[in-house]
Image (cartoon, rainbow, N blue to C red; front, side, top):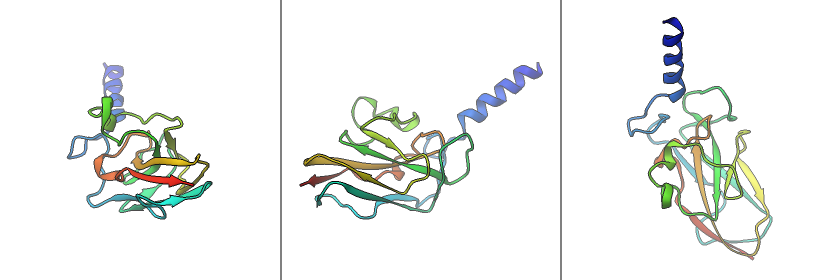
Length: 149
């Protein structure tokens, strides 16, 4: 009986609280994420350093501890905007993949230098919790397009 109760409690804690909008991890009203030094339509040179901005929350490394109102940055490169496409409904509540189109900054980094080939590229920032699950649609940027010369 005690083992069953403890196992059930562990599952509830692992699932985490639900925010008012139904997403797994709550976040403060008014929090936002933004690009500091690059904007839609910019023409840039490679390598390009991109600085990540955050308002109303804190940055901390990803890991096993869940702190209130902190998370880490993710950069989406050359993919559809977050919340669109075949994963539109579930993408907000699942761990983001880690690949060439989904860059994780789980060490708490607030900038990255990228080597991008010449041409157009799309970028979008997503802020996620300790487990790489996006906080929700308020903590992403609009997708921007840049041109690398």
